[in-house]
Length: 159
Picture 1: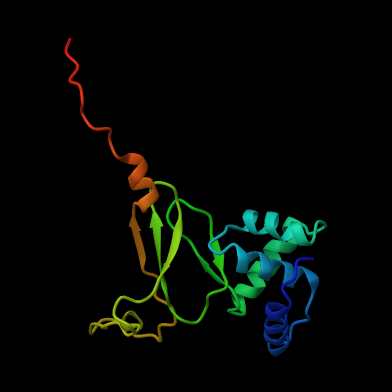
Picture 2: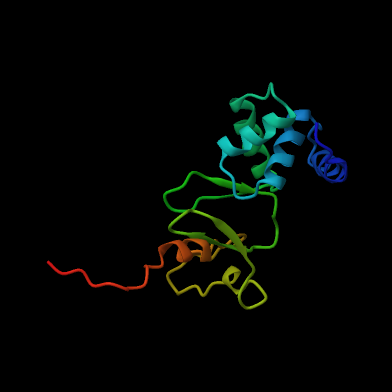
């Protein structure tokens, strides 16, 4: 296995605090998500199999679901994409997605705190305690912008 000992100690402590056993499958999935943030389950499976070749797809889906329920992983679903996972949890950050290549970047709250967690409720609403607000920025990343630049017009073609 690759050396993830510092992370493994933190993950082991978190698993124990949630009443879960520390298994090689859970540690492999956590390491794969940590080193490949914003990856779908299939990408996490491929990355985790580098450390644990016998890992099954079913095991990865079960572990991802369990760790998401425990809030050790965050799952989010950009439009036209399978669910993506990351280990950055608990800070209500947002995401920017390139509509051309699909690259995802983390975006900290634009105002420095999470005002989106305290919505304004109208008189017909039944207020609830908001835990997560997903803000999704969509645009074109700098790499895709550079590829899409049109060549300069040096010659006009006539018929």
